Image 1 (cartoon, rainbow, N blue to C red):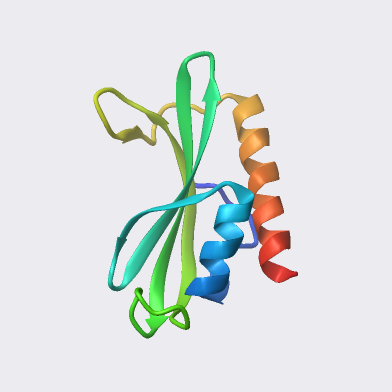
Image 2: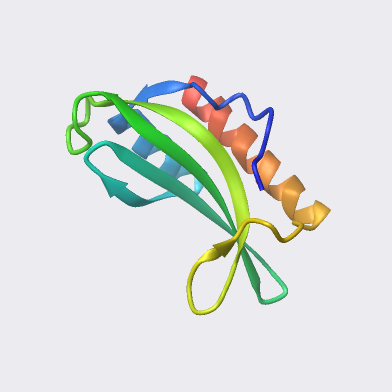
Length: 113
């Protein structure tokens, strides 16, 4: 499920600030390579896990350097499936969507501060 109207799509930041802000907000830089990174936030509800993901892409530099500039391309979430993976088609409960939206707003405010 794509999460629209977060105000994060198109936001640019250097890697050091993005990593620091993500860590403080509870996100983890999980998947990464030299030109892209994905930040994730896990929400648990009744033995079910949901992940909020932010895809970023390098627009200047390479990912291992703190001054590398990244742009947030997409924000989405899915339900974890066994043994691994995410289902992006399953409807997300309203309460979980609310938690995700609050966390994304917190992340945005921290990034802009």
